[in-house]
Length: 139
Image 1 (cartoon, rainbow, N blue to C red):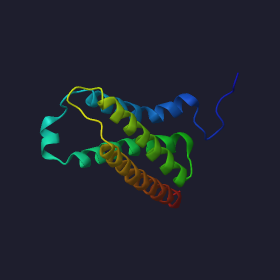
Image 2 (cartoon, rainbow, N blue to C red):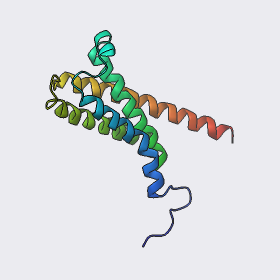
Image 3 (cartoon, rainbow, N blue to C red):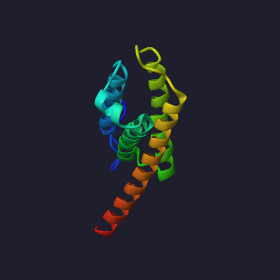
C-alpha cells in the first residue's frame, strides 16, 4: 500500500484531473469525426488543413497544460509529449475516419494535425515558462 503523495507532488487522482480537459476535448474530436458531415458551415468556409491544425493545436495545448501541472517535466519533454500524443491521436483519428461514411483518411490531414500540435506545444511551453518566471519574481 502506498502512502500519501510527496509534498509538492499531486497524487494520481489529481494528476488525472489535470488531464481531464484534454481527454474531454479528445472525446469531442472523436465524436465529430464519427459524423458524416460535421460542422458543414465551418468546413465549407475555412481551409480544411487550417481546421486540422487548430483542432490539434488545441489538443496539444490542453495536454501541455495538464502534463505540466501533473508532472512538471522540462520544457523539451513537455513539448515532445504533448505534441507527440496529439499527433498519435491525429493518426488514430484519420484511421477512424476511414470507416465513417462520406469521410476520408488523408496523410495530409495528419501532417496538418501534427504541425498544429507542434506549434501549439512550443507556444504553450514558452508561455508556461514565462508565467513561471513572472510568478517567481513576484514571490
